[in-house]
Image (cartoon, rainbow, N blue to C red; front, side, top):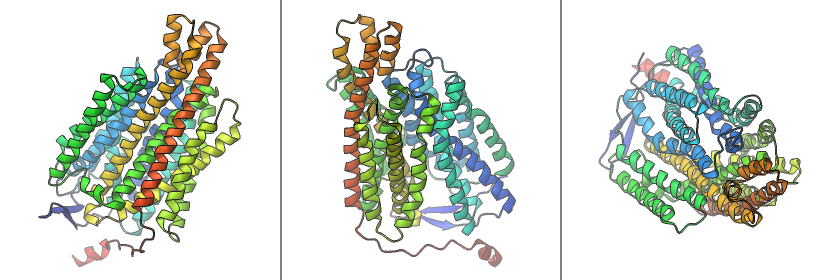
Length: 540
């Protein structure tokens, strides 16, 4: 079953599309609820995947229980997923308009499930990185088409209720992901955290085939292959240069600064190409607006900090403190609880106070909690760690939701889709650079701190201990040198302290940008009334 309906787009002389609404078909309420259940299962799957890997990083670094991955390889295993997601997502919406949202959604699920199976049985880190990139491509096809199906399945007040229910899957995924990963890692091999995706994806595919019409727009948006290739090439080159700096511990080498320079040039060309496209998938003109551009820059800097500090946290809890995967997963629950509490709290506050007065202090607090990692050590009581994580989650939750909603709602209706693409791309780009940059700072500082403890050690021991604290602990156990393991822990803690300081500075810069970008007070806008589809049908 296929329905061609939705916003009909007409491109005008000023190159921006105007939208004319056509009438969606009415589905039975029971079928609407079942479709919502299918979408929530898939959303939960995506959010689980976004969180389980952080619990798995320390295991993957272990030469015996995992793959013996070094920090650079783990940065790629984490970043390749986000990079593919960031650069392909704004193309997926156009594919849905062209081929049908259910078709693209199903294709994304097949790719996601197949690459999860590949990741689960990867025999080396290179295969894992490639599989993770394929998983990111599948997620990029799923996410925008999933939202399109939700928006056109429900109308009127039912749509707002459905979105509210649907959004709970994010919180459940954030809270359940680390715990599920911890349970699987305590009882099975590391690949089980990816294998669990396969039956869930299969169940979702059945639900799509049975329940969901193949909605698509009657007007096909043009694809943007040049923009897609330039954005992928630019981000890959930039991330490679940043991660390579951590592997060689210097910035002056040609294999460090040349990729960074090439990446920046390609990203600049990407912006120029998008400025010349008649209907761009990523519209750089929107970033020229003070509120929209500054708000997105602040969100990108915040996501830089969140991804980097999450990377540190995984190795701190399981590596330095020796937590089991299950205990580490449980220890991360306060972050998800804080984020779930922060979003509705901020939503209530912005009804009474200016958005800037709510979100800027929250962003400053988020920066301070990330900088707070500089005060954590090997003897820090767990209760203080939990309080820090809860406040961090609360602060981040109070920023992301309200700022994102304000940025998109301030755009004209005909540019809301383009604005959403820009916002999502900037956020994911911030995450990619945060993983690369934050991990590189940690690697460089760890090597410098561990070097004095390696004097007189055999060459192979030095080489392995320099790679990471996880490798140093492993070789220390093998040669019965507990002092080397202690030195590795101390070096890691030092590296985390330095990195946390830099991360806090970056996020504080985001707070300064947000302070400038947001107006001191907003005029309250009247809500835009939802079209009365039933009245429209009766008049036809």
